[in-house]
Image (cartoon, rainbow over all chains, first blue to last red; front, top):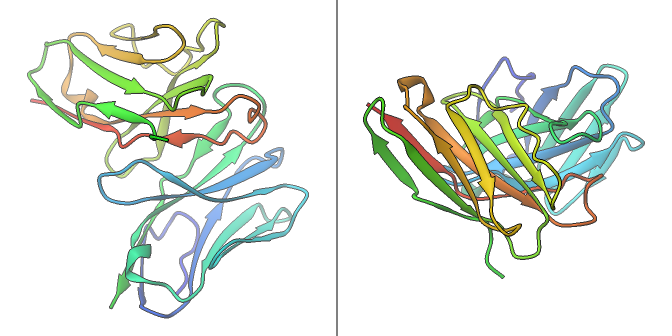
Length: 113
Length: 116
């Protein structure tokens, strides 16, 4: 399954399938991006980050892709598990000030067993 | 070690009352942030503390909101004369020294505030 930017706030996938969550950012000067996972009743948890001089970064079962040309970021989760059900936020870092991390509204991922 | 903790986890109050929300950051973390998360919304920056520097209060929505950080550790967010629109989850995050560029923030579980 695939969601497009922040206009589709929900995504449902079958357990074992791959998930792709997309995020469009607005500031071409943003130099650093983070994906957070927020489970119900908990605070956001860092998943993976990527600097603007990279196109791809891989973690454990997760991959982040960055397309600076179209200001697009995606999070790919391989072999999605029920424990992956959560809201996923992208955040863009726009500078060095305190209020420099801007968060999207998030996409709710539901994994169907 | 322990993560960021916040208390209370839930707070229900009546309109017009004052509330205090507490954040215990990870020991040794020099930076502390407060955010507000309204239903279905992204995180809204409120205030930032960094060491002994003056806090960045640019995100506080009104003068009813204030925060302090004592001894460079525990922080308290105070909302005076609460309004129904203050209902939200208030999140605290801390960041270790030396990670400023990466802005790697560790979040607490949040306090869910409901103003009746």
